[in-house]
Length: 358
Image (tube, rainbow, N blue to C red):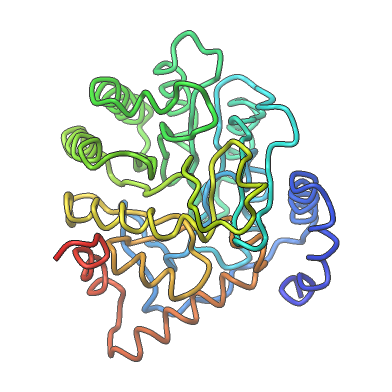
């Protein structure tokens, strides 16, 4: 029913300010009765991070910042949901308007600035879903005015790890001044060491993932992957939004807005970076492919580039929740066409080609 209603609701939602439409969507999802996720093709199951994911299609962070509707989202058919970003103390983020649709480009620009209800509110909601099942992770960051950003990540990890399947360390948001500086090798090494120690001290088996920016140079990627391997990180999320503005953007006026660009224009650079990352880490660190996933073909390409899981968000603005089922059906068809019974043989098989290497 939700899938059928979206074509009717889309003109109304797109007639509103983008953030207002998003808030109404969250409110609507919160009113849905509980429902079991639809059964998935067994061939789509993925074993990763010590967990069995029923399918590889997840919701990226940023949609459900406050962990208000994780179960409703799982009911739409996502294999997993990442809530957040979360920072320790509540903060309003940047002034509105701060999110912009680029419809001709099937893209979004946001400069939310890690607006968050804070750690207490999110921790309480995640704790309350104990026993409900479904794989939920959380994206964590640091307060804009924090005197000790490393301590912010530790606090979030210690509090949230017992209630989630994974924690994504976000040092790549372009909308918090100085946050990407934590991607430097020395800072990152210290940060990951502290986060892993906090996770271990909590007694939680939650995986620790690191989310990286699509704008880093390959020399920076070398350093980040080496640090992640050294610190025993369980996964890399490739990638966050980009500060680049491709010359091909049709919405040239909106493209001048500051913030992170996501959606279809991000697919190419994010997928190349994903492939480059796979060529560096191989099967030693599972990868999550994010950026421009708006079809089964896009998801399949991310897997060929090295992703074991994929995430989407911006495409939902244009395609609606039915996209989740469309992608899963398309992946199943691909597997059957190749005579495969799982996605494992596809992971990374074309990484060199997709990275643009000979």
